[in-house]
Image (cartoon, rainbow, N blue to C red):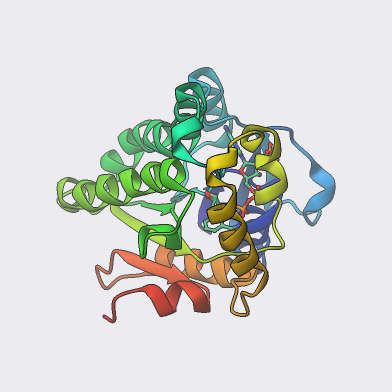
Length: 247
Ligand SMILES: NC(=O)c1ccc[n+]([C@@H]2O[C@H](COP(=O)([O-])OP(=O)(O)OC[C@H]3O[C@@H](n4cnc5c(N)ncnc54)[C@H](OP(=O)(O)O)[C@@H]3O)[C@@H](O)[C@H]2O)c1
C-alpha cells in the first residue's frame, strides 16, 4: 500500500486531496499547521501530523514521524492580492517563505529517501496564474512561477534516480479558505491611486462563471502522482484547462 504526505490539509484543495487518496486505498499523512482530526475520516490509514513548511525543525520531525513515503504533495500555500507598489517587502518574503522556499525545503527533505529507493513522486501545486498573467497578484504569481521553473529543471536531474516531479496548476476556487486566509496580509494594499483599476478587477471576479472545485484539484493531484508518461504539467479545473497551452 502506498503512502502520500500532503501539506496544508486543514482546508480546501489539500483537505480534499487527503480524502481522495484515502478513498483510493492509500495511506495518507495529512499535515497541518494546527492539527485537526475531525475534518478527515477516522481510519488506520490516515494520520494527522503537525507541520508548518516554513519551520525546518517541524519538517524534520514530521518526516521522522511519517516513516517512508511514496508521494509528497506540496499543496500548502498563501495568497496575496494587492498593488505591488505598496506591498511591504516583508510581506513579499512571507509569501515566498511558504509558497516557494517551503516547497523547496520539503523537496530537499524527502529526496534522500526517494533517491536511495529509486522511486518517489513530488507533486507541486502552483496556480493557473502561472498559465496566463492576472492583475494585482504580482508577488503571488512570482512565488508560484519560481516553483514552475524549479520543478521543470529538477525533473531532469532526478530522472536518473527514477524520481518524478510534477506540477498541478489549479484554477480559481471561491470555496476554499484561500481568500479569508489572506485577509490581514492584504489590508491597505489597494491605495487610492489604484482604486479605480482594482474596482474593475474586483467587479470582474464577481462575473466569473467557470471555476475550479476542490475535487478537480484532488483528481489532478491523483493523476499527477500516478502518471507514468513523463508529463510535467497538470492544469486542474476547467478555467485552468482553458488557459493551458494545448498539449
Ligand atoms: N483557491 C484558489 O483559488 C487557488 C487557485 C490556484 C492555486 N491555489 C493554490 O492551492 C493551494 C491550496 O490552496 P486552497 O485554495 O486550498 O487554500 P486554503 O483553503 O487556504 O488552504 C491552504 C492550506 O495551506 C496551509 N498553509 C498556509 N501556510 C502554511 C505553512 N506555512 N505551512 C503549512 N501549511 C500552510 C493552510 O493552513 P492553515 O489552515 O494553518 O492556514 C491551509 O491548510 C495553495 O498552494 C494555493 O496557492 C489556490
